[in-house]
Image (cartoon, rainbow, N blue to C red):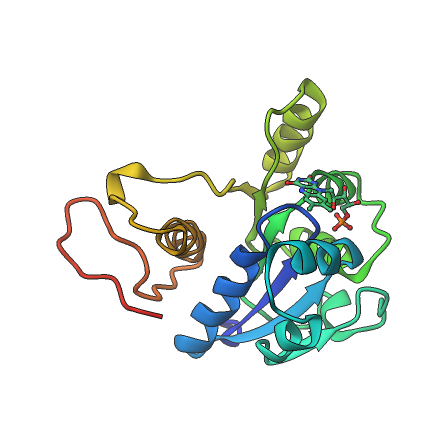
Length: 195
Ligand SMILES: Cc1cc2nc3c(=O)[nH]c(=O)nc-3n(C[C@H](O)[C@H](O)[C@H](O)COP(=O)(O)O)c2cc1C
């Protein structure tokens, strides 16, 4: 039983809400249904970092849920999907997922993704990292999550912040076998698509 072409997207309150924005754009372009949950803190970072209103961000997804709506479809393992990406993922959200003590729909959906053995990709953004952060990441990796911090790939010769963001988002989508044409791949001469 192959899952429907849909992905759960979590946007938490780490710096880099643009990662979630570009992810939603990429999913729309390749026809993957996006199911979005935005944390309360992400609404704050969105306002600090972009000109986008929360309603405009939500409108970029096929389905958008309130973070408090723990009865939403994505809170159940019976909701079929390819998995989940949290972009960006804050230390707080990462830590909640690691403990299983989930207080919002975002972390509940991530917990469900793990229990159903579906891919969970966490684009954790914090630096520097203390030992507790690193231990939490190890714990999550042992539980099956993929820790995918949005670190720049300079070999791709980025010319803009968008290039950096697209590469990070594209590499996260690679983990689901999805290609939105936004990764400048080593050893390939392909032109990346304009968004
Ligand atoms: C402008 C701004 C930038 C932030 N950047 C980060 C960050 O990069 N990483 C992080 O873990 N937390 C960051 N925080 C703090 C988180 O928003 C905060 O820990 C919050 O409680 C996270 O909640 P959430 O995980 O439910 O979204 C930032 C906060 C603000 C206002």
